[in-house]
Figure 1 (cartoon, rainbow, N blue to C red):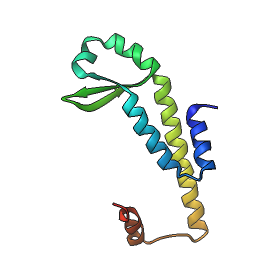
Figure 2: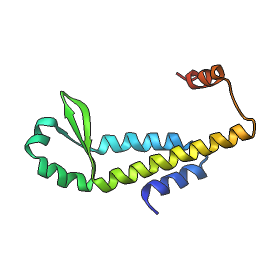
Figure 3: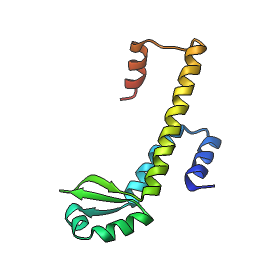
Figure 4: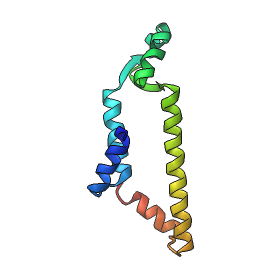
Length: 116
């Protein structure tokens, strides 16, 4: 079982919200991620590609993250996960509509902005 799957299983056992788990994983990943300046990435592009095969590399400009260099396999896997999540959410939404579990636009806005 992959690390991501293992963390999701643990999160489910602990009854944690999957989006919260993914958000925290993303924060930890970003802290540990290698960062290079755009100038360094330009000078050492071949090396950056090699590094990205092992782990994503964040490219910064003026101290701010502007891009990520990731292995194509990782990018494709990320896209599959996003697509799976999107279709899962769409399926749930359709099931809710069929079951009559709907909300007005005002109720949805209130829920979204409730904790902001």
